[in-house]
Amino acid sequence: MAVQATAREALPHWDLTPFFPALDSPELDAAFARILDEVAELERLFDAQEIGADDSGPDDAATILEDVLGRLNRLLEQLRVVRGFVYGHVTVDSRDEAAQARLSVLLRESVRLTNLETRLTAWVGRLDLDQIVEQSETAGAHEFALRQAQIVARHLMSQPEEQLGAELDQTGATAWGRLHGDVTSQILVRLELDGREQELPMSEVRNLATNPNRDTRQRAFDAELAAWERNAVPLAAALNSIKGQVNVLAARRNWDSALDAALFANAVDRETLDAMFGAVREALPDLHDYAHAKAGLLGLDRLAWYDLQAPVADGGGRSWSFDEAREFILEQFGTYSERLQAFAERAFSERWIDAEPRAGKRDGAFCMPVRGEESRILSNYSPSYFEVSTLAHELGHGYHNVAIAKRTPIQQRTPMTLAETASTFCETIVRYGALAAAGDSPSEQLQILEAFLETAFGVTVDILSRFQFEQGVFERRRERALSASEISELMLEAQEQTYGDAIDLATRHRFAWAGKPHYYSSYSFYNFPYTFGLLFGLGLYARYTDDPDEFRSGYDDLLSSTGLADAATLAARFGIDTRAPDFWRASLDVVRADVQTYKALGSATPS
Image 1 (tube, rainbow, N blue to C red):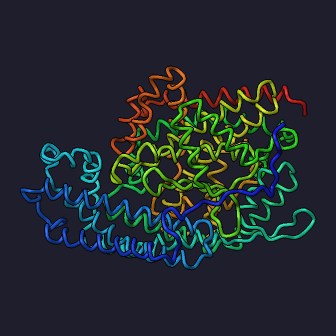
Image 2 (cartoon, one colour):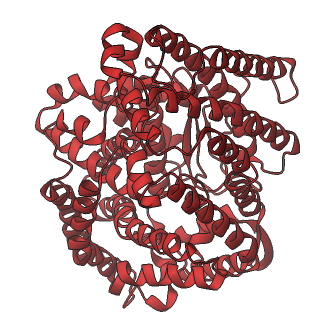
Image 3 (cartoon, rainbow, N blue to C red):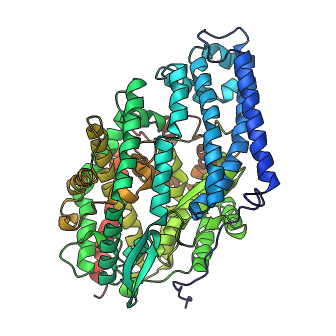
C-alpha cells in the first residue's frame, strides 16, 4: 500500500541559482547593465532610422526591420531571464525587500522597451508588408506578429501619448497590481484550528477548502471572508484604478470596449466567444447536476460555497504525497511520449518546482518560462489528487515552453486562449491514467472524477461568473469608482446568474474578486481563455484518441506555432471550427458524460 502523505511532508523549493547566484551577485548586476546598454543601443538605432516617424517607411525598410527584429529578440531573451529570476524571488516571498527593489528597477526600465515597441508598431503600421515579406526571410518568419502589429497601429494614440501612458502605467495599473500581490500574500488569517487560535497565511487557509471536516471548512471560509473584509478598501482601490485606466486607454485607442481589445489580444473573435459561452450557458443545468450529485454524496441538500472543493471519498480519499505525484505523472506522461516524460523528469530533478505553501508566498499555481527550454513552476501543494492534477497542468505549460523554445521571443508570444492547450492535454492524460489505475474501486474513481469535474465546473460555471462580473465592473467603472460593497454586490449577482440552484446562494463568496490576481492587471478578461483552453484541450484529446500516431505527428508543431497564427487558423489544422457551437457542445459532452459516470459511481459508493 502506498505511503500516505502528511501535512508536514517536506516539499521542494525551486532553484534559481542556474540563472544567477543571488540577488546581490555581480552576475545579476552585469546582466542588468547589459540590458540597459542594449536598450540604449536600440533607442539610438530607432532615432537614427527615424523609426516611428510619420512617413511610409524608407526604401531599405526590409533591411532595417531585419536588424531591429534581431536586436529586439536578443534583448527579450536576456530580459526574460532577469525578470524570471527576480520575479521568482518575489512570488515566493513578497517580504523580500531586495527582490522587490530589483523588480521595481526592472519595471521602471522596461518602460523604455515598451516605448520602443510602440514606436516599432506605429512604423510597421505604415509599411508595405506584402513587399517586405517577399524581400526578407526574417520578416516572413515574423509575418503574423507584423500583421497583428499593423492592426494594433490603427489603435495607437499619438507617440507622445503612448510614451506617457507607458510611463504612468508603472505608477498606475502595474503599481496597483503589485500592491494587490503584496497585500494578499502577506495577509494572516486568524483561525481556531486543532484546538488553538492560529494565524495562518491566506494560502494555507484557502487550502482548508479541501478539508474533509465540514466544520473546519466553514470556519476557514468565514475567517477568510473576515480577512478579505479587513483588507477590502485597498483592494477595491486597486481594482477601481486598474479598470479605470483600462477603460480610458481602450477608449483613447478607439477600441469599442476593453473586451474587444482583450479578444484581439487573445487571437479570437466575438463569434468564437459567443459560440463558446452560448454552449456553456446551454450546459448549465447539466453542470449543476454535478453539484447536486456532490451534495448528495456529502449528505447535504445543497452545497455551500465552502463545500465546492470538499473531498467526497471516505476519509477524504487517497492521500497523494508529492513523491507519489511525481512518479505517477512521470509514468502517465510516458504513455504519450518519451519526450514528454523526459521533460517532466528534468523539471523534477533540476528543481524547477516550488511546491510548499508558506507565509509571503503567492497563492495558486503558475508556470513561467525563463531560459531556453527551462521554466519554473509554482504550486501550493496539498496531498490530494486535485493537486496532482494541478501539477500535471502546470507541467503541461512547461512542455509547451519546450516545444516553443526553438522560436524567437517575438514568435513565442502566445495568446492566453492557446496557452492552455498543453496544460489541459497533460491534465487529461493524467486523469485517464488515474481512472485506469483505480481499477474497480468506485471510491478511487470518484475521487479522480471529482478532481476533474471540480475543475471543469470552475472553468465553465465559475469562469462565466467571473467574465460577467468583470463586464459589469468595466461598465459601471465608466461612470464612477465603486465601493468595496458595490463590487461585492456585482460578484454576488454574477454568481447567482451562473451558479443558480447548484449552491446555497446565501453562502456565495462576496469577496471572490479580492483574492483573484487575474483582475489586477491591465491584461483584462483573464478568464474566458481558461474556458477556451479546457474545451479546446478536450477537443484535441478526442482527436488524439481517434488516431494517436497522426495526432503525435502534428501536436508539437501546433504547440510551437501558437504565436504564429490566430486560434481559428491553428484549430483548423485538426479539423476544429472554433466559431461553430457544435464543437464546444461536443467538448462539453465529455463533461456531461463524466457527470453521469460520477452520479453512477456515487450511487455505487457506500455512504
